[in-house]
Image (cartoon, helix red, strand yellow):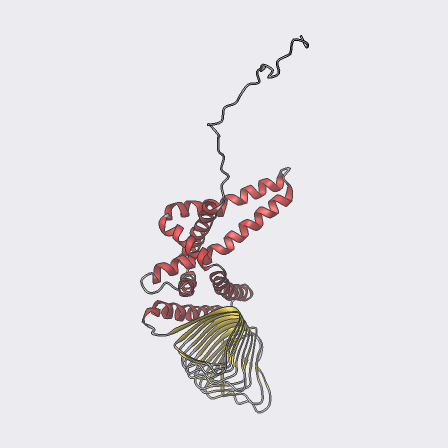
Length: 405
């Protein structure tokens, strides 16, 4: 069961990253794009944006209409206005209450859809809800708790610890969960493909048609481990996307400087990154075991963790500059494209992990090299023009008179 959950999560994240990458790579042909950022970013109700909207911040509220796609990253994201395009967002809490003509690709801790969606929805999160007022063409949902109370015109796929269905599904439902519940208002026109250990729970009045269950021997004993891996994967992807946008908003000039270091001196950045990634561990252990004590070791460990945490966003910005060097000079677009590319690469089996790890090492090298170069160096001047005089007796200026003699 959880193999399907893991695959669904990967597909969801890949769809989000891929859409961002395609849109960012083609940004130079878009005639109008609006970039917004800030702790509390609000698109007013009477405001209309003609073109794509790129927005990042702590709290994002879109009350106006957008004639284009929305790309957003933040903590709390609320879209109340109409979107004549796609919605691609990652955040702690994402709510889409306005009509969307295209698709929704979203990832977050809590993702809620309350409106009509002309296309499909691909959502990954801890708590995901298609509320009663929602209507979508197709739905692919992965999370911990999944609620499907709205209408799905065609096919739906839901993976999670629990899946509750109270809405209508036009064709087939694929459910990968150990807790599947149909309320009295649920209706599935086609077949329900159920992969779970427990029996399906349903209320009187539920119309679920044909049910096909997976064979007992098909269930993997490693379900719990795969579920944990899938959850870690989606949370890591969300945090990576949000962290990258926060970094580019707080320090765009510094990122330009850091990436420039990698472009001008790639060999130095690679060697420095290798040392900055692996050498500190031995130094920290040595400090903890010596008279320097745990305090120094703890401080060194904190600095090391900060460098490793920032290394991938730094590499993503660098990669974004390489991808879009001829298209734009916008820092947000660089970061969007780089983040999407890193997520895509990271999803590749085996080789993806190797490439991303190498990218992190390279990012750490760029960061450390820039910090070392910027660190103020003490200057010592030797005053060669000054002569050192030895003390010698001098003749008194006062000459004694005859009487004094």
